Image (cartoon, rainbow, N blue to C red; front, side, top):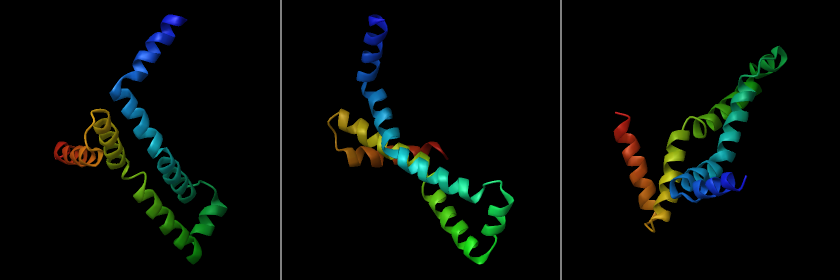
Length: 111
């Protein structure tokens, strides 16, 4: 059992694993918020869907769509930003510039 704990301790002291852990921990509330907004818009209950087709329901649906777009749809950018920030800090670099470089590299790779 001690060997497993020592291996786990070494693993979590790795700067890359630690940065990934911090990045996902920071963005977890955003992930949850986007998931709840998506769930409300797409809940498969007839009475809820009927309520969302009313004028007030359309406003709720639009707000939830905006929340989803600002959170879950941009998750790759959020994770790249926070991962670059924390990884840059572990190398004792400027975290903001590291995050900007991370976003820039992500944009180049997707083309």
